[in-house]
Image (cartoon, rainbow, N blue to C red; front, side):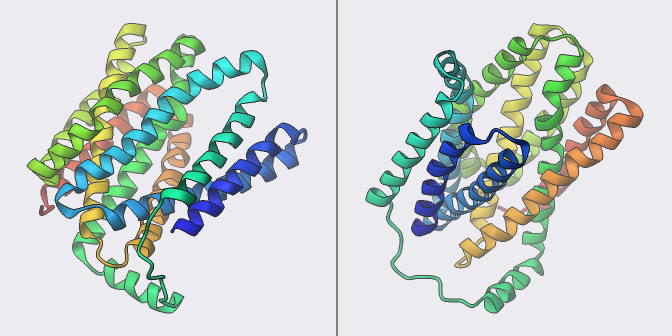
Amino acid sequence: MKRVLQTTLLAYSLLALLYPQAHTFPSLLAVSIARGVASSFLWLTSWAYIFSYSEKAAKGIETSFFSDMNDLASATSPIVGGFLTIYSFFLPFYVLSATSFSAFALVTMFLRESPKAETLSTKLQLKEISRFVRERRFLKTILLIVIFYALINVYYSFLSVFLNDEGISIPSIGIILTVALVPAVALEVPMGHLVDTRGIRRTLSVAALLTTVSAVLIPLSTDFLYTLVVVTAFTISYTMIFIALYSRMSDIMRGEKVAMTGAIATFKDLGYTLGPLLAGFSINYIGMAHTFLVVGLGFIIILPIAWTLHD
């Protein structure tokens, strides 16, 4: 895992320098595809490391802290990037290159992992994955992952477009999305503690109910303050689902954490792909507001599945 992280971060550092040189669509597409591949490896390996070394009794806190750091960067990077572009449009790319190389150096110096390398052949790894797939607890987790990411990526893809179509300015949308993420970042570690103390089933059930209610409320008004409050509530609620799901993943994995993280990433990306695709057809026929209502109600599907889980 350490070697993959080193390679990926070094690739990130180099790819960031290529963006200012990509003056044509084909060159920009090529750099973006390469960055997408690097991003997949970075996501997969980072979570595999967390799953491999997190303590079972503190899985909620440890996974939520890692997620917290991701979301903190997501909340601050648009603001930082915006200020950097005042000096130069390409400056954020150079800063990305420098920070990626710094991360590479930190991983090289400080990251520790078991010296035992993975020696299973691809055939044996697929056999282990197929054994997992036949287990009901794993299938329930996979189903939850596909549903959650399919639904949430509709909001990632279309919420900004919807708000802008409803008359909210782009700077105001930026404020809404940034402010909405701040409480979620602050609450992720307490959410992880809640998972550890109250259990995944209860936490996930409450989170699914709150997410459904807040998601349905989003398209009912275009007032700035109303939207800010509701989107903030929605962000906090779906973040709680995220923490519960990733704690669940850490809990059901055994020795095959790296291979299983890759398998789970496949289903995550399946949901990511299906959500916007189906929503695009829905928006074409019933409009964006009604699509958000339908998708918001879809979160309630998580509730009955959550109640069948065992902590």
